[in-house]
Image 1: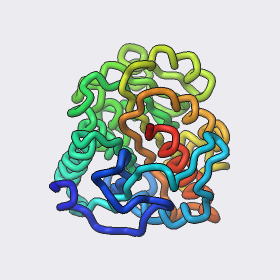
Image 2: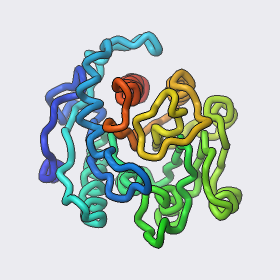
Image 3: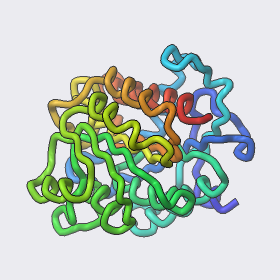
Image 4: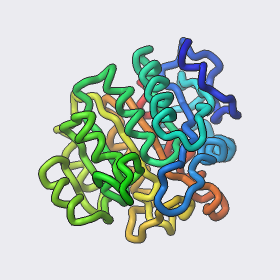
Length: 288
């Protein structure tokens, strides 16, 4: 299968199954951080998040399900040509498109946020009426950053402008340019500062739609998630993040990513542990 032409194996996430064909969800690491604007290092996230996942219990008190009963496969990490953004995005797109076409939900571990452009594009092949739910500190709606259009600061703008996704819901945003603010007023549903409360207000709009959920870990305040490339004060708590992803439990989540965890800046694995727990809950809640 073409998906596995570009895989380099890493250790499995806790309770991952060994069979791709019978899985309903596929965990995939994407170690690309070539476009960060401040602190690189998120290419090491997938490996560390897998390692700390063994600190977790398989059973969830949030949804009363057990990972041992969850049909998900850990495909390992993509082998990407270091520094080659365009070719890397092509490999990411082709791999995620294959997962989606196989009728499985991709669960992606980044990586800088630009990877979401390729992963959302891959899911769009299967679900052309996709809506995107975006948790982040930053609007990521720029046309370019320092003259470069391929940037983690442009990713959601590219999803709107280039992929034509009309329904983008942005939560927790507390940083951006005036141009981004003006663009959001016309082209996205932007809810600044908070996640859980405004998310509750739009759940009815999202019902019946295929949803892609992209979580930049810096939506969480750096007090709770210091291990990230572009920390931004004033964020949500880890508790609110977990409560917010549970609000989406009854929706049709067809793609998921968590990005921008940078273990080299982490304190006692605080951020990696939060990411691992978020992935555990997402696997249990969104795989039906």
